[in-house]
Amino acid sequence: MADSDVRVNAHLVIPAAELSWRFSRSSGPGGQGVNTADSRVELMWDAAASAVLSPVQRERVRERLGNRLVDGVLTIAASEHRAQLRNRDAAKARLAALVAEAVR
Image (cartoon, rainbow, N blue to C red):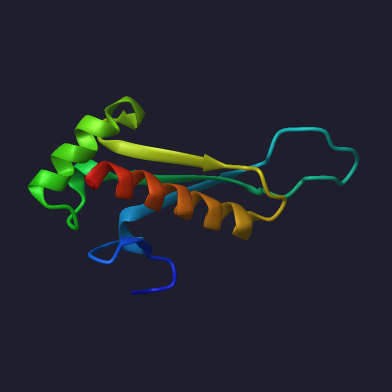
């Protein structure tokens, strides 16, 4: 498992190659030179096309996360931390928790 892979449970790991990232500036208060880094992250995972899900798991994800999927893609946003790396970790943790609950 590579460092950027997402471990959902003992049997399911989403490889980094299936993840897409987008970065932007976090909203909120700020002054001159404050919060000018692209610390907000969006993590996208195409559950419908994922090679790591079995057909049964794919159907469970579609049923249980259907309201969060857009064309089969699950998007997670994180902007609660000031550092992009911490927001990336938070987004990966949220993805793992959502998928773990969905495939259970």
